[in-house]
Length: 185
Image 1 (tube, helix red, strand yellow):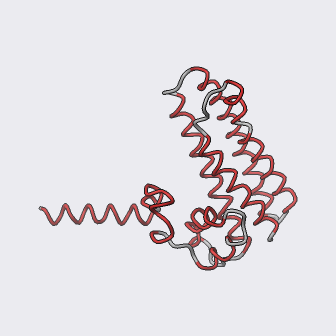
Image 2 (cartoon, rainbow, N blue to C red):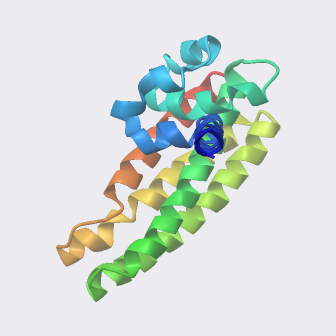
Image 3 (tube, one colour):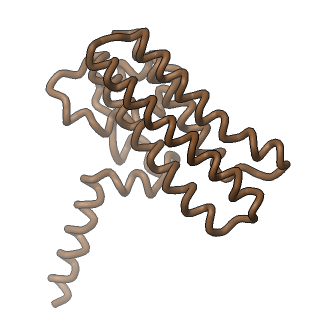
């Protein structure tokens, strides 16, 4: 019975590792590239972005989904990761709104609207990328940055901390990487 339990734990750990949850749980400092090393081609392209570590750790997770790794593929990987992180930010808004004072909760409602707008503009950027319309893609990505950057405004005006600051910083870095990658296609 003990060895069967150990096998279940080992299987669960392997499943978490394969789905990328262990590196996420460990964070950037603990997870680093050792747990989930980036594909060398992805790493080379990501090295040309303003935030290469963010690019490698987010886009690199999707490398096996692409038969050819080129600038366009890495852009698609990064935009997909950007979209997923925006969805995570919206979930965090919902979770945070339950435990904070009313002034912050009202500001979070505004953030949720901005993140929803961001999701729409990311979708438009993804469609533009499909047609290699870099001009439209970059405009949509810039609009996405403006949307989530707006999230901080009501917190600043109310003089209260923004519980979404970490998300906004990561989203900004991912968006800047996307815009740089769009210039490379």
